Length: 150
Length: 246
Image (tube, rainbow over all chains, first blue to last red; front, side):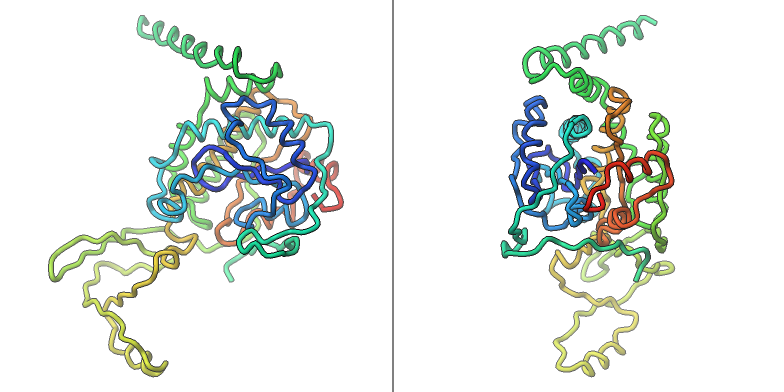
Protein backbone atom coordinates (compact mmCIF):
# COMPACT_ATOMS: atom_id res chain seq x y z
CA UNK A 1 0.00 0.00 0.00
CA UNK A 2 1.30 3.44 -0.88
CA UNK A 3 -0.93 5.50 1.43
CA UNK A 4 -4.35 5.46 3.06
CA UNK A 5 -6.34 8.58 3.80
CA UNK A 6 -9.11 8.33 6.38
CA UNK A 7 -11.69 11.00 7.20
CA UNK A 8 -13.91 10.48 10.20
CA UNK A 9 -14.12 13.35 12.63
CA UNK A 10 -16.78 15.74 11.53
CA UNK A 11 -17.85 18.17 8.88
CA UNK A 12 -15.18 20.90 9.04
CA UNK A 13 -12.29 21.59 6.71
CA UNK A 14 -9.17 19.45 7.04
CA UNK A 15 -6.76 21.23 9.38
CA UNK A 16 -4.50 18.52 10.79
CA UNK A 17 -2.64 15.52 9.42
CA UNK A 18 -0.44 13.46 11.71
CA UNK A 19 2.36 11.37 10.24
CA UNK A 20 1.38 8.74 12.81
CA UNK A 21 4.95 8.21 13.94
CA UNK A 22 6.29 7.40 10.46
CA UNK A 23 9.47 9.45 10.38
CA UNK A 24 9.89 9.59 6.61
CA UNK A 25 6.35 10.58 5.67
CA UNK A 26 6.52 14.29 6.48
CA UNK A 27 8.69 15.26 3.54
CA UNK A 28 6.30 13.60 1.11
CA UNK A 29 3.26 15.32 2.58
CA UNK A 30 5.06 18.66 2.51
CA UNK A 31 5.89 18.08 -1.16
CA UNK A 32 2.31 17.12 -2.01
CA UNK A 33 0.74 20.00 -0.11
CA UNK A 34 3.06 22.48 -1.83
CA UNK A 35 1.34 21.57 -5.10
CA UNK A 36 -2.17 21.99 -3.73
CA UNK A 37 -3.94 25.36 -3.87
CA UNK A 38 -3.47 27.39 -0.70
CA UNK A 39 -7.22 27.67 -0.30
CA UNK A 40 -7.18 23.96 0.57
CA UNK A 41 -3.79 23.59 2.20
CA UNK A 42 -2.91 26.77 4.08
CA UNK A 43 -4.59 25.85 7.35
CA UNK A 44 -3.35 22.28 7.47
CA UNK A 45 -0.91 21.53 10.28
CA UNK A 46 1.38 18.59 9.66
CA UNK A 47 2.42 16.69 12.76
CA UNK A 48 5.90 15.41 11.93
CA UNK A 49 6.72 12.72 12.83
CA UNK A 50 3.57 12.83 14.91
CA UNK A 51 2.31 10.23 17.23
CA UNK A 52 -0.07 7.37 16.66
CA UNK A 53 -3.65 8.54 16.96
CA UNK A 54 -5.80 7.13 19.70
CA UNK A 55 -6.99 4.35 17.42
CA UNK A 56 -10.36 6.02 17.12
CA UNK A 57 -10.95 5.33 13.46
CA UNK A 58 -10.28 2.98 10.57
CA UNK A 59 -6.72 4.15 9.80
CA UNK A 60 -5.75 2.36 13.04
CA UNK A 61 -6.52 -1.00 11.42
CA UNK A 62 -3.55 -0.39 9.07
CA UNK A 63 -1.09 1.77 11.01
CA UNK A 64 -0.90 -1.08 13.55
CA UNK A 65 0.82 -3.06 10.78
CA UNK A 66 3.14 -0.13 10.12
CA UNK A 67 1.34 0.68 6.87
CA UNK A 68 1.17 4.39 6.00
CA UNK A 69 -2.39 5.20 7.02
CA UNK A 70 -3.30 8.79 7.85
CA UNK A 71 -6.25 10.64 9.27
CA UNK A 72 -7.41 13.82 7.53
CA UNK A 73 -8.35 15.68 10.68
CA UNK A 74 -11.24 18.14 10.43
CA UNK A 75 -11.79 21.40 12.18
CA UNK A 76 -14.10 20.04 14.84
CA UNK A 77 -16.49 22.92 15.40
CA UNK A 78 -18.63 21.62 18.24
CA UNK A 79 -18.65 18.09 16.91
CA UNK A 80 -17.82 16.42 20.23
CA UNK A 81 -20.36 18.30 22.31
CA UNK A 82 -23.19 18.90 19.87
CA UNK A 83 -23.89 16.30 17.20
CA UNK A 84 -21.49 13.48 18.03
CA UNK A 85 -23.33 10.18 18.48
CA UNK A 86 -26.70 11.84 18.92
CA UNK A 87 -29.96 12.02 17.01
CA UNK A 88 -29.06 15.65 16.20
CA UNK A 89 -26.37 14.49 13.79
CA UNK A 90 -28.42 15.30 10.71
CA UNK A 91 -27.87 16.68 7.21
CA UNK A 92 -28.51 20.31 8.22
CA UNK A 93 -25.33 20.30 10.37
CA UNK A 94 -23.09 19.52 7.42
CA UNK A 95 -20.88 22.37 6.17
CA UNK A 96 -21.20 21.66 2.46
CA UNK A 97 -18.46 24.04 1.26
CA UNK A 98 -15.90 22.44 3.57
CA UNK A 99 -17.07 19.00 2.52
CA UNK A 100 -16.58 19.94 -1.13
CA UNK A 101 -13.07 21.24 -0.42
CA UNK A 102 -12.22 18.12 1.58
CA UNK A 103 -13.26 15.93 -1.36
CA UNK A 104 -11.05 17.98 -3.71
CA UNK A 105 -8.15 17.84 -1.24
CA UNK A 106 -8.56 14.07 -0.90
CA UNK A 107 -8.66 13.60 -4.68
CA UNK A 108 -5.46 15.65 -5.01
CA UNK A 109 -3.64 13.76 -2.25
CA UNK A 110 -4.68 10.42 -3.76
CA UNK A 111 -3.49 11.55 -7.19
CA UNK A 112 -0.15 12.82 -5.85
CA UNK A 113 0.42 9.68 -3.75
CA UNK A 114 -0.41 7.55 -6.78
CA UNK A 115 2.05 9.42 -9.01
CA UNK A 116 4.78 9.55 -6.36
CA UNK A 117 7.75 7.62 -7.76
CA UNK A 118 8.91 6.44 -4.32
CA UNK A 119 7.16 3.99 -2.10
CA UNK A 120 6.31 5.81 1.13
CA UNK A 121 8.94 4.88 3.75
CA UNK A 122 7.84 2.74 6.68
CA UNK A 123 10.44 3.92 9.19
CA UNK A 124 8.89 4.35 12.61
CA UNK A 125 9.86 6.61 15.46
CA UNK A 126 11.67 4.64 18.13
CA UNK A 127 9.64 5.91 21.07
CA UNK A 128 5.87 6.17 20.86
CA UNK A 129 3.52 7.76 23.32
CA UNK A 130 -0.11 7.10 24.09
CA UNK A 131 -2.22 9.81 22.46
CA UNK A 132 -4.48 10.22 25.48
CA UNK A 133 -2.28 9.76 28.53
CA UNK A 134 0.99 10.99 26.99
CA UNK A 135 2.78 8.04 28.59
CA UNK A 136 5.41 6.06 26.74
CA UNK A 137 3.78 3.19 24.95
CA UNK A 138 4.43 0.55 22.31
CA UNK A 139 3.35 0.29 18.69
CA UNK A 140 -0.20 -1.17 18.73
CA UNK A 141 -0.89 -4.73 17.69
CA UNK A 142 -3.36 -5.44 14.89
CA UNK A 143 -6.53 -7.30 15.79
CA UNK A 144 -9.12 -8.99 13.64
CA UNK A 145 -12.57 -7.41 13.51
CA UNK A 146 -15.53 -9.03 15.22
CA UNK A 147 -17.55 -11.02 12.69
CA UNK A 148 -20.79 -11.24 14.67
CA UNK A 149 -22.36 -10.12 17.93
CA UNK A 150 -20.64 -11.69 20.90
CA UNK B 1 -36.45 27.71 -24.97
CA UNK B 2 -35.48 31.28 -24.14
CA UNK B 3 -35.19 30.40 -20.46
CA UNK B 4 -33.05 27.42 -21.23
CA UNK B 5 -30.71 29.53 -23.32
CA UNK B 6 -30.28 31.95 -20.48
CA UNK B 7 -29.54 29.16 -18.01
CA UNK B 8 -26.80 27.87 -20.25
CA UNK B 9 -25.16 31.28 -20.49
CA UNK B 10 -25.24 31.68 -16.73
CA UNK B 11 -23.66 28.34 -16.10
CA UNK B 12 -20.81 29.18 -18.44
CA UNK B 13 -20.28 32.52 -16.70
CA UNK B 14 -20.27 30.91 -13.28
CA UNK B 15 -17.75 28.34 -14.39
CA UNK B 16 -15.44 31.03 -15.69
CA UNK B 17 -15.76 33.10 -12.53
CA UNK B 18 -14.93 30.12 -10.35
CA UNK B 19 -12.17 28.65 -12.41
CA UNK B 20 -10.23 31.52 -13.89
CA UNK B 21 -9.07 33.65 -10.94
CA UNK B 22 -7.89 30.55 -9.07
CA UNK B 23 -6.11 29.28 -12.16
CA UNK B 24 -4.35 32.58 -12.65
CA UNK B 25 -3.42 33.55 -9.11
CA UNK B 26 -3.47 30.86 -6.49
CA UNK B 27 -2.64 27.63 -8.22
CA UNK B 28 0.89 26.68 -7.23
CA UNK B 29 1.53 24.35 -10.16
CA UNK B 30 0.78 23.90 -13.83
CA UNK B 31 -0.03 20.23 -13.27
CA UNK B 32 -3.03 19.66 -15.57
CA UNK B 33 -4.50 16.88 -13.47
CA UNK B 34 -4.49 18.94 -10.28
CA UNK B 35 -6.11 21.80 -12.18
CA UNK B 36 -8.70 19.44 -13.63
CA UNK B 37 -9.47 18.07 -10.15
CA UNK B 38 -10.04 21.62 -8.95
CA UNK B 39 -12.36 22.50 -11.84
CA UNK B 40 -14.28 19.23 -11.61
CA UNK B 41 -14.71 19.59 -7.84
CA UNK B 42 -15.71 23.25 -7.86
CA UNK B 43 -17.67 23.69 -11.08
CA UNK B 44 -19.29 20.24 -11.24
CA UNK B 45 -19.13 19.19 -7.59
CA UNK B 46 -21.85 16.86 -6.38
CA UNK B 47 -21.29 16.93 -2.61
CA UNK B 48 -24.60 18.61 -1.83
CA UNK B 49 -26.82 16.18 -3.71
CA UNK B 50 -24.77 13.15 -2.66
CA UNK B 51 -24.89 14.21 0.99
CA UNK B 52 -28.60 14.96 0.79
CA UNK B 53 -29.34 11.51 -0.59
CA UNK B 54 -27.19 9.64 1.92
CA UNK B 55 -28.04 11.60 5.05
CA UNK B 56 -31.63 12.67 4.41
CA UNK B 57 -33.17 10.17 2.00
CA UNK B 58 -31.38 7.07 3.28
CA UNK B 59 -30.72 8.36 6.78
CA UNK B 60 -29.44 6.25 9.71
CA UNK B 61 -27.28 3.29 8.72
CA UNK B 62 -26.55 1.23 11.80
CA UNK B 63 -24.56 -1.93 11.02
CA UNK B 64 -26.87 -4.82 10.26
CA UNK B 65 -29.93 -2.71 9.44
CA UNK B 66 -31.87 -2.16 6.24
CA UNK B 67 -30.58 1.42 6.25
CA UNK B 68 -27.03 0.09 6.06
CA UNK B 69 -28.00 -2.22 3.22
CA UNK B 70 -29.74 0.60 1.34
CA UNK B 71 -26.70 2.87 1.79
CA UNK B 72 -24.33 0.17 0.52
CA UNK B 73 -26.54 -0.48 -2.51
CA UNK B 74 -26.69 3.23 -3.23
CA UNK B 75 -22.92 3.74 -2.96
CA UNK B 76 -22.29 0.76 -5.25
CA UNK B 77 -24.87 2.10 -7.70
CA UNK B 78 -23.11 5.47 -7.77
CA UNK B 79 -19.71 3.94 -8.45
CA UNK B 80 -21.18 1.72 -11.15
CA UNK B 81 -22.82 4.76 -12.76
CA UNK B 82 -19.40 6.45 -12.82
CA UNK B 83 -17.71 3.40 -14.32
CA UNK B 84 -15.87 2.41 -11.13
CA UNK B 85 -15.93 -1.25 -10.17
CA UNK B 86 -17.58 -1.63 -6.75
CA UNK B 87 -19.07 -4.37 -4.62
CA UNK B 88 -19.88 -5.13 -1.02
CA UNK B 89 -17.86 -7.70 0.93
CA UNK B 90 -19.52 -9.79 3.62
CA UNK B 91 -17.13 -10.16 6.55
CA UNK B 92 -19.61 -11.06 9.27
CA UNK B 93 -23.24 -11.51 10.20
CA UNK B 94 -25.20 -9.04 12.26
CA UNK B 95 -28.62 -9.00 13.79
CA UNK B 96 -31.05 -6.67 12.04
CA UNK B 97 -33.04 -4.03 13.86
CA UNK B 98 -35.38 -1.28 12.75
CA UNK B 99 -36.29 1.80 14.72
CA UNK B 100 -39.98 2.30 15.37
CA UNK B 101 -41.84 5.20 16.95
CA UNK B 102 -40.71 6.43 20.34
CA UNK B 103 -43.03 8.87 22.00
CA UNK B 104 -42.89 9.64 25.71
CA UNK B 105 -45.26 11.95 27.58
CA UNK B 106 -45.17 13.11 31.14
CA UNK B 107 -48.80 12.83 32.37
CA UNK B 108 -48.55 14.27 35.90
CA UNK B 109 -48.28 16.77 37.46
CA UNK B 110 -48.83 18.26 33.99
CA UNK B 111 -48.85 16.95 30.47
CA UNK B 112 -45.59 17.45 28.63
CA UNK B 113 -44.19 15.58 25.67
CA UNK B 114 -40.62 14.58 26.43
CA UNK B 115 -37.64 14.29 24.13
CA UNK B 116 -36.81 10.60 24.22
CA UNK B 117 -35.06 7.96 22.15
CA UNK B 118 -34.98 4.19 22.53
CA UNK B 119 -31.54 2.63 22.53
CA UNK B 120 -30.80 0.70 19.34
CA UNK B 121 -31.53 -3.00 19.69
CA UNK B 122 -34.33 -2.39 22.20
CA UNK B 123 -37.42 -4.57 21.81
CA UNK B 124 -40.71 -2.84 21.04
CA UNK B 125 -43.34 -2.16 23.68
CA UNK B 126 -46.28 -3.57 21.66
CA UNK B 127 -48.36 -0.46 21.86
CA UNK B 128 -48.76 2.28 24.42
CA UNK B 129 -47.70 1.72 28.02
CA UNK B 130 -48.60 3.98 30.89
CA UNK B 131 -47.22 3.64 34.36
CA UNK B 132 -45.89 5.29 37.43
CA UNK B 133 -42.36 6.65 37.39
CA UNK B 134 -40.11 5.64 40.27
CA UNK B 135 -36.64 6.65 41.38
CA UNK B 136 -34.54 3.83 42.83
CA UNK B 137 -33.53 4.32 46.47
CA UNK B 138 -29.99 3.72 47.78
CA UNK B 139 -29.49 -0.01 48.14
CA UNK B 140 -27.63 -1.49 51.07
CA UNK B 141 -27.13 -4.94 49.52
CA UNK B 142 -27.78 -6.94 46.35
CA UNK B 143 -30.66 -8.63 48.18
CA UNK B 144 -32.10 -5.22 48.89
CA UNK B 145 -32.04 -4.46 45.14
CA UNK B 146 -33.58 -7.85 44.30
CA UNK B 147 -36.43 -7.24 46.72
CA UNK B 148 -37.05 -3.77 45.30
CA UNK B 149 -37.10 -5.06 41.71
CA UNK B 150 -40.13 -7.27 42.47
CA UNK B 151 -42.09 -4.13 43.33
CA UNK B 152 -41.34 -2.10 40.16
CA UNK B 153 -43.00 -4.22 37.50
CA UNK B 154 -45.08 -2.02 35.20
CA UNK B 155 -43.34 1.13 36.37
CA UNK B 156 -40.76 3.33 34.64
CA UNK B 157 -37.48 3.41 36.55
CA UNK B 158 -35.74 6.76 36.24
CA UNK B 159 -31.98 6.62 36.39
CA UNK B 160 -29.85 9.70 36.38
CA UNK B 161 -26.95 8.67 34.21
CA UNK B 162 -24.36 11.20 33.04
CA UNK B 163 -24.69 12.05 29.36
CA UNK B 164 -21.58 10.33 27.98
CA UNK B 165 -22.58 6.89 29.24
CA UNK B 166 -26.12 7.60 28.14
CA UNK B 167 -24.93 7.66 24.54
CA UNK B 168 -23.46 4.31 23.66
CA UNK B 169 -21.46 4.87 20.52
CA UNK B 170 -23.59 2.98 18.08
CA UNK B 171 -26.97 3.62 19.56
CA UNK B 172 -28.43 7.04 18.97
CA UNK B 173 -26.76 8.54 16.04
CA UNK B 174 -28.23 9.78 12.79
CA UNK B 175 -24.78 9.57 11.15
CA UNK B 176 -24.56 12.80 9.16
CA UNK B 177 -21.28 14.35 10.33
CA UNK B 178 -20.25 10.98 11.83
CA UNK B 179 -19.67 9.69 9.33
CA UNK B 180 -21.79 10.58 6.32
CA UNK B 181 -19.30 13.37 5.65
CA UNK B 182 -16.42 10.89 5.44
CA UNK B 183 -18.39 8.72 3.06
CA UNK B 184 -19.30 11.68 0.85
CA UNK B 185 -15.71 13.02 0.89
CA UNK B 186 -14.42 9.73 -0.48
CA UNK B 187 -17.33 9.21 -2.88
CA UNK B 188 -16.89 12.67 -4.41
CA UNK B 189 -13.09 12.30 -4.49
CA UNK B 190 -13.47 9.04 -6.42
CA UNK B 191 -16.01 10.61 -8.79
CA UNK B 192 -13.60 13.47 -9.53
CA UNK B 193 -10.66 11.09 -10.01
CA UNK B 194 -12.64 8.86 -12.34
CA UNK B 195 -13.37 11.93 -14.49
CA UNK B 196 -9.91 13.45 -14.65
CA UNK B 197 -7.48 10.65 -13.75
CA UNK B 198 -8.84 7.52 -15.42
CA UNK B 199 -5.47 5.76 -15.76
CA UNK B 200 -3.90 5.94 -12.30
CA UNK B 201 -0.29 4.87 -11.87
CA UNK B 202 -1.23 2.91 -8.75
CA UNK B 203 -4.51 1.14 -8.04
CA UNK B 204 -6.89 3.32 -6.09
CA UNK B 205 -9.22 1.57 -3.67
CA UNK B 206 -11.82 3.24 -1.49
CA UNK B 207 -13.18 1.41 1.54
CA UNK B 208 -16.51 2.42 3.05
CA UNK B 209 -16.15 0.19 6.09
CA UNK B 210 -19.04 -0.32 8.43
CA UNK B 211 -18.94 -1.36 12.09
CA UNK B 212 -16.34 1.30 12.94
CA UNK B 213 -18.09 2.35 16.13
CA UNK B 214 -18.39 -1.24 17.31
CA UNK B 215 -14.61 -1.73 17.20
CA UNK B 216 -13.29 -0.94 13.70
CA UNK B 217 -14.86 -4.23 12.63
CA UNK B 218 -15.09 -3.53 8.90
CA UNK B 219 -11.59 -2.15 8.44
CA UNK B 220 -9.94 -4.67 10.78
CA UNK B 221 -11.62 -7.51 8.91
CA UNK B 222 -10.52 -6.00 5.60
CA UNK B 223 -6.94 -5.59 6.84
CA UNK B 224 -6.83 -9.13 8.21
CA UNK B 225 -8.44 -10.66 5.16
CA UNK B 226 -8.12 -8.38 2.14
CA UNK B 227 -10.34 -9.20 -0.82
CA UNK B 228 -8.50 -11.10 -3.53
CA UNK B 229 -11.31 -12.02 -5.84
CA UNK B 230 -11.07 -9.16 -8.30
CA UNK B 231 -8.24 -8.59 -10.72
CA UNK B 232 -7.57 -5.10 -9.40
CA UNK B 233 -7.44 -6.18 -5.80
CA UNK B 234 -5.18 -9.12 -6.56
CA UNK B 235 -2.81 -6.87 -8.42
CA UNK B 236 -2.96 -4.42 -5.56
CA UNK B 237 -2.18 -7.09 -3.00
CA UNK B 238 0.70 -8.79 -4.74
CA UNK B 239 2.38 -5.80 -6.31
CA UNK B 240 2.54 -3.48 -3.36
CA UNK B 241 2.62 -5.70 -0.31
CA UNK B 242 5.66 -5.10 1.85
CA UNK B 243 7.07 -6.62 5.04
CA UNK B 244 4.18 -5.11 6.99
CA UNK B 245 1.67 -7.10 4.95
CA UNK B 246 0.46 -3.87 3.34
